[in-house]
Image (tube, rainbow, N blue to C red; front, side):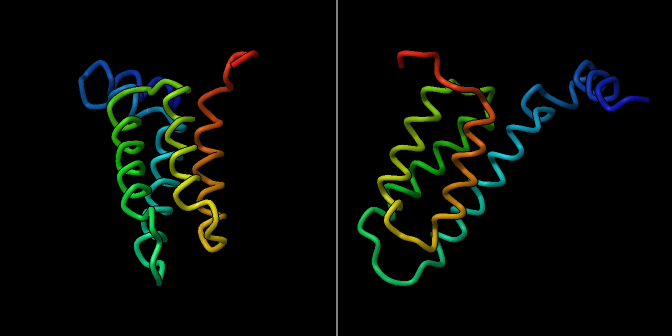
Length: 111
């Protein structure tokens, strides 16, 4: 049986939601989790660590509870990048989060 058919059957049975079956959600949640872990073990003082942690938690919650709006995802990315963007050790993980958000689609032209 094809994966799409299995997922659809599980969804009808109430065992899988649309969010659970969307690979973009799982990829973004994984990227967010990796960045959160790296931020947690980062030595030294980071003035905006709490802001970054809070926004990463909000981003995870957004994608966990339905397909989020792209503008809201991008706003979260800007807040997170502003909080940790100058820390080169976090750059690869931050890039993964950005790529995960990009998978949800681009903003319309002019925005």
